[in-house]
Length: 177
Image (cartoon, rainbow, N blue to C red; front, side, top):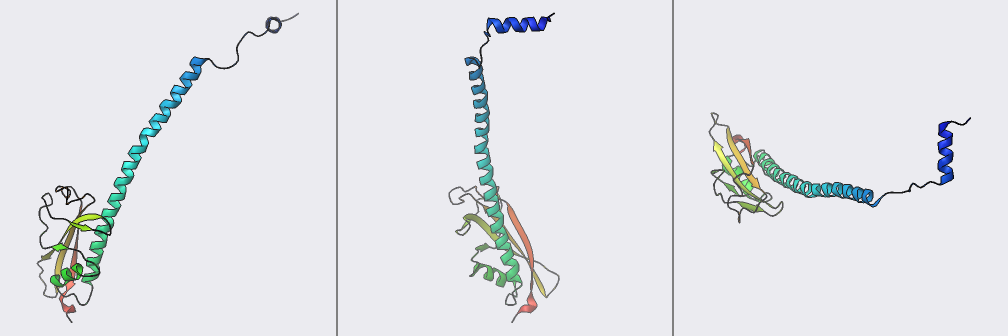
């Protein structure tokens, strides 16, 4: 006594399998379209990644320049030969630092004249201000810098949204040699 399953299987084998093996053209085309859509979506992310990479590289250059200038101010303020804010400004503007400093920070949103630093490729506006103190043995100086990666000589508004870095340093008047 054969079961219904065995009889159906025997009949299919004897008649020959008429089913096709493989994929139809429509199925292949659909698979290609799905893969192409995914590849295009991934390729659309590359320009975004490049733009973000460039922006982060510029931010790193800007902060490194500001850190270099403000660190130089701290080093120069600790020099025994520096006994006033004017001496500090002279030390920063002379070799080995060669930073150009103004006496006025100006309006951050205005058309301030920017200097170009060839080493880091940034444009900056730096200033030094004397702050009043209650003691006779120390002077306080505020040193600030506004830095941009855009060419501030071509774009007069390049410094408008540029970050501002400020530090206060104390100069010991007793250091006078």
